[in-house]
Image (cartoon, rainbow, N blue to C red; front, side):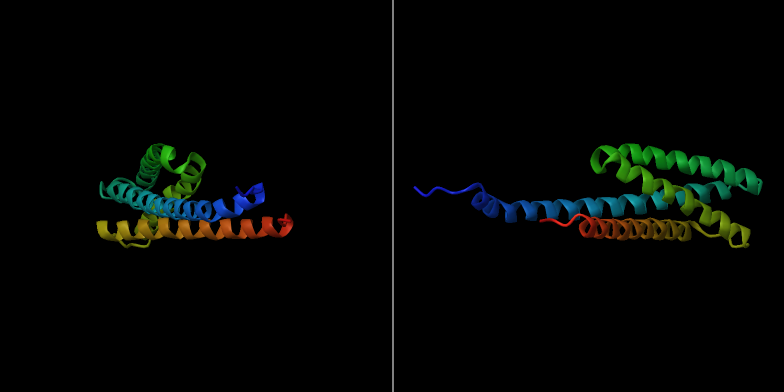
Length: 151
């Protein structure tokens, strides 16, 4: 019987562990992307619906923003057990605030977007936030690796 050291066992187990971790990371990234796109689309659609009521512009923006943030918060609470609370709440709050205001901006410039334009704009804002978060993660990881090299 051959005796193995702990170092030998780590080398045997490590590739399988890395493969599982890589797949888990990919699946979480897909989930985050879909969630942020969904938040962008739904909150923009809520704001679009508020603008269709024909109220005063200031009242529409205030009530629409409150409704959009409520929807974003409910979506984040529902997705938190699956994706994690901080990971879902913070980026989705930004998407839930910026994306609906694009409809208000279009209305200020005299353009009344239809439902499909609102959905596309919301999806673009969600995807852009996902790309921003992933780039930020890459920069932070590179900084940590430079600061704390593995021996």
